Length: 237
Image 1 (cartoon, rainbow, N blue to C red):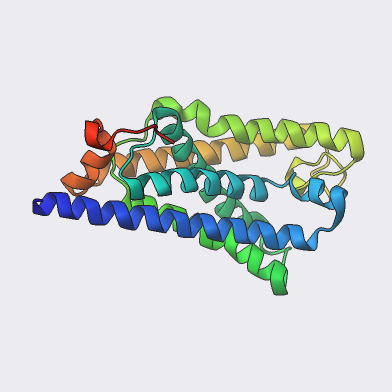
Image 2 (tube, one colour; image 1 turned 180 degrees about the horizontal axis):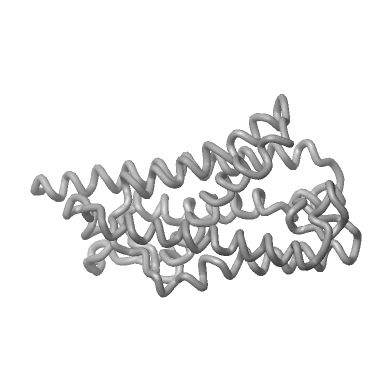
């Protein structure tokens, strides 16, 4: 085995292990949150938060791609695209909380630990894995619609849910009077447009950095881009 192959294998093992560690952190944070929100109604309410959903998505994706990396398997095209989107969503989760919500939400104890995991450890960890351990050159501007599809669908869901039972998970998706909401549907629409722009800008930053940075060790790149050899064939996750 050549040096490039050894470098690629080491990178692949680090990448897979790091993804599984971040996935464990995301699931731990979700578990701590659900342990506090007792009952079916509390669980349904908690599941309405973008934080819980984006953490669950990145955890599931990282479990598949993490074990796949350790086994030397490439992710399929759909899974790879979902991972790129999930990374944008989870990083925006951290940024939105830090700049929009951290001043008004100060949990302590187990909820404080869950908050730290969901809004800082998992988003930062996901970004660092991509920055240092992932082969580069996969982000595409053509996926812009995918970056914002889920966040916009989430805003619609929040409005529909609020019309049914009056609950809105975040003030910026609530048309209720201030300070509980932003005062009108038009204001919610303006916030949705701002957040959509945020997701687009973040995705474009990922794309720009992705194509400016070196693609990494040839072994690591080949792990993602070369077809599987017959001896390592198997179903993609």
